[in-house]
Amino acid sequence: MAYTQFDRVPNHYAGPIIQKVKDFRLANGKRSLSPTLLEIGQLQVLIPRHFGFCFGVERAIHMAFSTLENNPEHRTFLVSEIIHNPLVNNELKERGIEFIYDAEGRRQVAADELSDDDIALIPAFGTTLQIEDSLKQSGIDTSTKEYRESYDTTCPFVSKVWKRGEELGREGYTIIIHGKYKHEETQATHSHTKEHTKTLVVLDEAEAKKVAAYITGEMALADFERQFAGMASEDFDPERDLQRVAVVNQTTMLAEETQQVTEILREAMRQRYGEENLDYHCADTNDTLCYATNQNQNATRALLRSSADLALIVGGYNSSNTAHLVEICSEIIPSFLIANSDEILSQHSIRHFDIHAKQMAESQDWLPGELPVRLIITSGASCPDILMNQVLQKVAGFYGYSEAEIAEANVSLFEEI
Image (cartoon, rainbow, N blue to C red; front, top):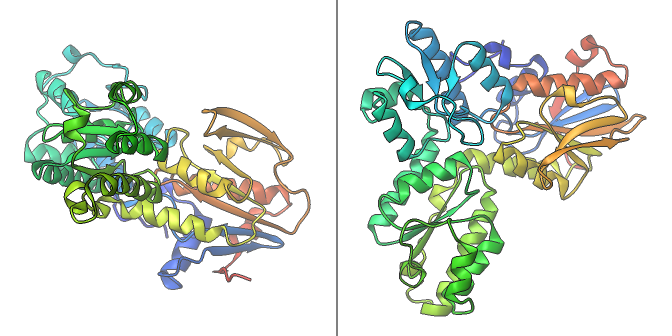
């Protein structure tokens, strides 16, 4: 029996084999980070303890399908993709939802085409105050409590980051946002947070080191302004606004990298102001890290002690959290990011997304030709289980296993050798 936390998440997003894994983990080893082992003859498939839909994604999908079901007389729009998965977004489009902005932020539905009789769902990433104002000018007021409870699918953990950023801003801290500047969530966090304090977006440790270099006096003002042009709030003054900082993140970034960004800035403050006043100059913001992102990343790392032959990561190509799972896996074994089983062209050829080149690639001889084989399959937080299920079935089929044999796979906790 397929189950979800929310009753309006379509059951066709579940997959029988993956559901078998979830049922097993519910009854056995629920707290252990050890992966689940599926044995289909001599094919071993390892599934991490945590994968697929997180709470925020399930909640967003539930709200979207509930809105369609409960408001058939109203036109329903989405500000942008509700999550980063084409299967879900395409199904919502097929059911009549229009997207006001596309994935690149280009407006698709003009403001004068909307009215106060329409519904505009805010996606799981949240949206900017500027977009909310635009909707209000079209007659759609997203600021009311009733509206937000019904049509704002912003993940509660994203909202938590905004709230914490506001609190820290009121305490006098400049907010450093660790994220990808053009990502919808980072844009939303930047928009909400800069209402209360100065903000600056940094992408990674390398950029954090440049901020640190300015703080310690090793980088000139002109170089700093050139490096971070367009990445800060209006009238950002590095000399004034980098005296006290607090780091929050785009919740899908690598948690350990966010912590490293914080430590780089704390060390810079230590050098400039000394140990005694360190917390005053660089706040502790570990409480803003998303638990689901942490769980998925930690569970993925636990997989990599298994001596697997390769990893398949299933998810949207514009999904930040999925890309980070690929980063983690590819440090240890050959790893391929695929949107669905259609990208597996044959046992010899696979089409996949190169997260570094940001383009599709094709690899040959990617799958061992002979058994035994040990394979990792996982998915990002916005990926329906059915897509993992289809990938597993297709790979097992290459080795001659039937659907009946796959369904009868032995399930156990993987014990490290």
